[in-house]
Structure formats: structure tokens, C-alpha cells
Amino acid sequence: MGHIYSAPYATLQPDLCLVAEDDAGVGGFVVGAADTRTWESRLEQAWWPRLRAQYPAPDPARMAEWSQDQRRIDMIHHPKPIPAVIVQSYPSHLHINLLPRLQGQGIGWRMFAAWLAMAAAHDIGPLHVGVNRENLRAIGFWRRLGFVELDLAEARAGRTVWMGRAPLSQPNSK
Image: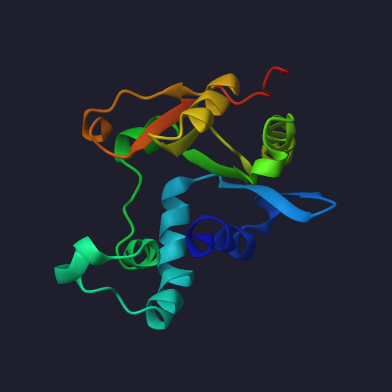
């Protein structure tokens, strides 16, 4: 998971990365990119090739038996671009992840506000996020930050709920 959702940002776009830490250590992060299409191209040129060499693609004939790691390795070999309809209206994106010990304390909201302030210098436009459809708590979190679910025919049956937020501004406090 880290090879997909955190490490490339820390390596290729460290100026748009924030980390949450407490007495137990690092407990979360927020990362993102101003231009999703440029980011996807950058990953294809500078990030995926090394990982593809390190992790051989799993056998597609055995897909039903794949572990979670093998599913992620397949994502490294066959990344799916964000649907064009999303990127056209919401060209920037971000990820926030917090361990359970930091959830429900307003830390995610504060990290998002700090990331927006930091991102202002990077021409960040309207934002999109992808959330696992089963993660109702995360969907509620993004709604409270001003994101709305995007009604996309191609995504209705999928695992991902796409959400967008525009115009870019500081979120209301909790």
C-alpha cells in the first residue's frame, strides 16, 4: 500500500506531504498533487518501473487466489488512471490516512486545513478523492470537509466512491 499511496508522494512531491505524529510515533499523513494527469505520467516515468522490476506481476490465471499484496502489485503493473470526467472538473487530488488512535480527534480536519494552506503555493485546483465504498466513516469525513459524491455511471458498480470539492478554500471548523 505504501508503494502506491504514500511513498511516491514523499519521494517525488515532498513539498505537498504532511505527517501526523504523537508519542507512539507517526500515525498518519496527508499527500497530494496539483495536476493528477501530470502526476500519473510522473509515476509512469519515475516510480513504477523500479517497482515493476522488484515485484513480478502476479499470474492473472490465478487472480481468484491473489493475496492483498498481489492485488497491489497488479496495481503497480497496471495502474488505472483516474476517470477523465473527474480530472476535468477536479484536477488536483489528495490522500489522508490516520491510524485509529488518531481518528475522531479533529486531527484529520487540522491536517487537511494545513495541507490546503501549504498547497496554495502549488496552484492546487478543485480536489478529488477516491474512497472505498464500504468505508462509510471516511465518506462522512470527506463530506464534513466539503466534498460531495460525484455521480458517475462508470463508478456506480465499482468499489470506489469518487468525491470532489470546489472551490478550493479552508474547511469550516468542526
